[in-house]
Amino acid sequence: MPVVPTPLADCRGLVLAEDVVAPVSLPPFDNSAMDGYAVRAEDVATAPVSLPVADDIPAGRTDVRPLEPGTAHRIMTGAPLPPGADAVVQVELTDAGTGTVHITAPVPAGKHLRRVGEDVRAGTVVLRAGTVLGPPQLGLAAAVGAADLPVRRRPRVVVLSTGSELVEPGTPLEFGQIYESNSVLIAAAVRELGGLATVLRAVPDDVPAFRRVVADVDADVLVTSGGVSAGAYEVVKDALTDHGVRFVRVAIQPGGPQGSGTVDGLPVIAFPGNPVSAALSFELFLRPALLTAMGHPTPDRPRTRARVTTPLTSPSGKVQYRRAHLDSGRVQVVPVGGPASHLLASFAAANCLIEVPAATTAIPEGTEVDVVLLT
Picture 1 (spheres, one colour):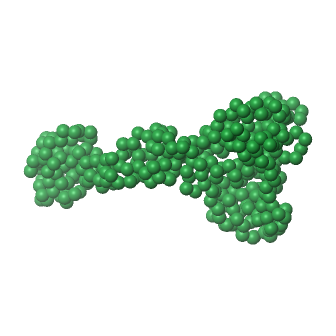
Picture 2: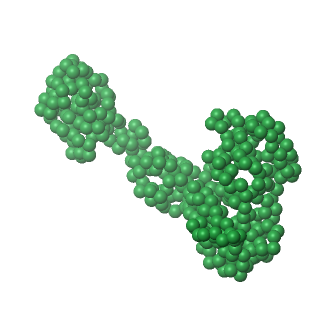
Picture 3: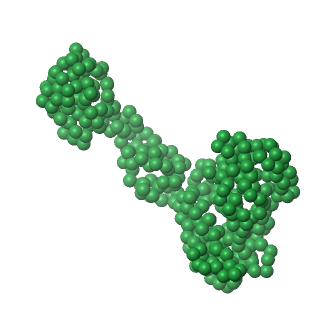
């Protein structure tokens, strides 16, 4: 993705493209860490002692007068330390006087002070290129005066489901129809990782109509679901074969039929239509690609190992991904539902995937397996 200057409020989850150098120090001036009284430590060394209060310094004051020997300035947290002061007596060690203050205990030089540059020195790099921007990083950027940041912009993804049987949720179903869910699932997944997703309503199984829709798409990538297998009405495959998109079978279960390519300069990713196949295809192929395009340093899901609680079987020659739930201690992993690609409820109940190697056809109970974390 290209680098664009983006306001801080719109940067959460994006990746910094260039180092950020602090133009100011943090703190930018010596200031008080407490509500209390700015003093010379030698003037309170023999406390209890009373000192005249010569000035009042609230936070934000810019015209701070020097502190004369034998006096105190009442000062608030964050207010600039007056020249001549070398300590702050917290208000709890005083009678909170305004004309004269009675100080009950001594404080050493440097007490309750925040020194200029204690956190950040002007001219130093505070955020490195490649940093994923969360609330603390954005707060730091604001603290050094940045109004916007150079980030990799969000990818624009158009999501399109195909199938004459699909109807929009909320519409009464007729016999033979189902609610369209893949576009909702994929668009939500795109937005979760920081992309911009636009959903086009389901296109019927009509090749000319599908091609007209594709020709009007303006995005960084078009993602379709359905119409890529070996049936008689595979509209995506029929429309885009020999037009820049290659359709293959990948040795995974579920999600074998896949398509990818470019149509008139538009990248197209074609997923199968069964909901778990579409969801798994996004996880394996599109999610890491989008995160890489956005500059993320770690685009892959984290992995771990755990012992499976029930025996599993898997077809030879295919990498199988089984929906599962990993316990909080990451010791045991419990398969959820079967391997079929239409069982969306089990995917919604899972927090991980068990990855079964292509050469493995049976896994006994208690075997340690590879686990891909989804949350």
